[in-house]
Amino acid sequence: MRIHTSAGTLPAREPLGESGAPVLDVVVPVFNEERDLEACVLRLREHLARTFPYTFRITVADNASTDRTPDIADRLGRVVPEVTSVRLEQKGRGRALRAVWERSDAPVLAYMDVDLSTDLKALLPLVAPLISGHSDLAIGSRLAGGSRVVRGPKREFVSRTYNLILRSSLAARFSDAQCGFKAIRADVAERLLPMVEDTGWFFDTEMLVLAERAGLRIHEVPVDWVDDPDSTVRVVRTAVDDLKGVWRVGRALAVGALPLDRLARPFGDDPRDRAIGGVPGGLARQLVGFCAVGALSTLAYLALYSVFRAGVGPQAANALALLVSAVANTAANRRFTFRVRGRERAARHQAQGLVVFAIGLALTSGSLAALDAAVGASPSGSPSHGTELAVLVAANLAATVLRFLLFRLWVFPDRRSDLPARDPRKAVR
Image (tube, rainbow, N blue to C red):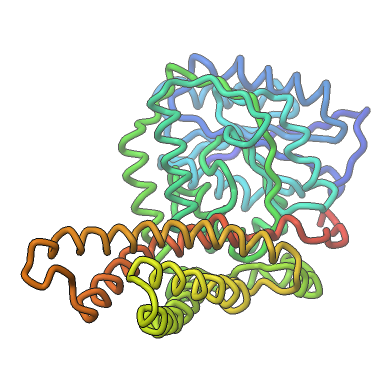
């Protein structure tokens, strides 16, 4: 790796970092961008010089370009005081970011795509919470409320589908994993980056998932974003690589192979805050708790159905048994699976649980109706009690996955962002 640096700061700006170090280091990873590189870097430099109140550096990270990109980056590093160029002989956005961030002396690190698809007005709101010490990471989001996005239907579909996969499989709560507009505190990066394996496009997602699971604060900024029609990103191949990364990270989290406590101890929320409200834990623990509660609820449901069936018809017995067991199931999952304490939102949780109950009722009632239709022509004219129970068990098992996802993503989502803010930490080292 060849590094070219140019010394120099803006004398009118207040220094926050160590002597001679900028407060913000913005990395621009590039590959064969000879046409747009100079104009975009100069535009970014002009914006920072006009709006950013502290010293800054722009680092052009060349990912093994084969055109004139390295020469242009080298020249910008010589003639523009705030610009530095870095040459890497291997491709990979994650590799470029890691190489620069691990060596940077700035207390706040950021990156953005060279096409500047994201409006630069969001840059100061992105890094301000990191400079103040309020947050640990910050991301620009094209899917957050207030964002304005112009892009084609293909990219819109891929982006929303990918983020839906992250929310359902890895329980991610950030809204946009792949927007090329992110920032991180250097002291957080020092501990977080060694845990991130990916060196390509999945680097962002992996970093955010690990940070979120460790309890770090992720600040989201709605952005104005216009798609670059000349982007060289291969959407299908990138999507396949990302899905492989989702599987790898999900498996590691499920078996507890990642030492996330190394992040939680120095940077996590104040332990006293964790007694307030509900903060769901890992996916594996929640699955175990949900299955245990579900097994007990199923036994209670079957016992109740047998009791009610002695006095009423199968549909009424099913509805009554399911209603009583659903209220108990929601309360048990609230307390033991998702570890929600106190009475706050208890009524709302039960109301949402009843919606989940209604879905279960529709599934189980539909199965009973199908059973009645199937055996209606038989000599007995009605199914046996044992057959009814078998069908109901099968219907409940079929609804379990959907019920768990609704509980996790809708009824009991992680509300860590609702907790009282911890005392600001120092933003510089």
